[in-house]
Length: 343
Image (cartoon, rainbow, N blue to C red; front, side, top):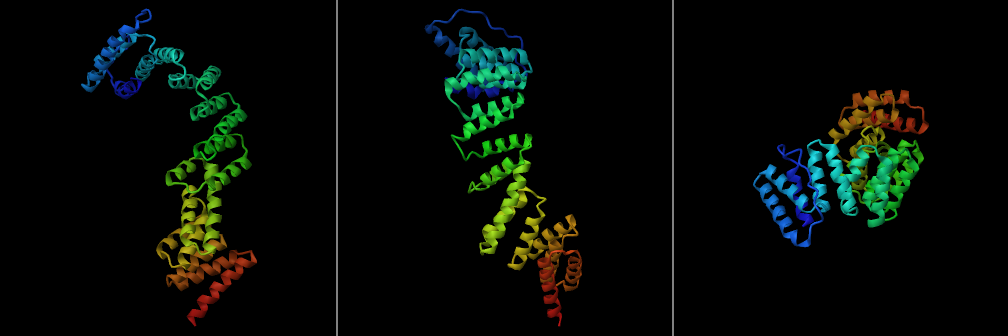
């Protein structure tokens, strides 16, 4: 029966014409034989919802509550309705009553209310009770994470997340929550260590990278890690896997010009899309026009496209900017190759 009520309550809260001042009659505990009357009103309320008669549906639901004021789910649903009507004080009363009647089953809305109103200590006490009844779950960890942050207790917030990670050590959500706490505490070393841990969770899916992108420091560090992995894969001839890692690195941190440069260069010299390679490389020198490596890559792509005069111009510019002996050697090799082809 509780499952059925959850299905129709979402429709009730959409109604704009529900009565606002409905009150619960104080009735004694209902004898068991009146359960059929409760069910009659309950199913009548569902029929009213199916007929789009939302005011009648609300009235019938209120009758259910009056018949059995100790039905926790009915109280909880009425709280949802009042909350949807911006009657937060009345909603809070229903949520609290639902929790008191069935703390293990009807605590979510009450806890949300307490946290939304920053009643952190009271919320913590309720969560302690819920955990004692139902065990430590993902919701427990998330609620404690929010509560401890509200209380400015970062270490306890980390401990709450870690307690859940002991159950599910590869939960990306909770690893990212942990990283966010370390970010707030200014603990960049721990964020990097978590980023390494996340980067090793293979295979990650596209939607998971979208989650990572929302945590800036993790996105930054994992982008660097993926760039290094891509370089290594390309060096051993695993081009497709290397390219996948470059794509991930750039997606996570679009300002990763090293990944963009290396990807463009590999794409060009291994017979990829030269037009795209040129576009990517051009972006790197727009961002950093004094980077000799970026200038060299752009010049060599232009050479491969048959634009040797422009390529030579950028190679000489790269040579002016280059300080590292190895970089200067590569640039000179490219210049020599172009000039040799001209002869």
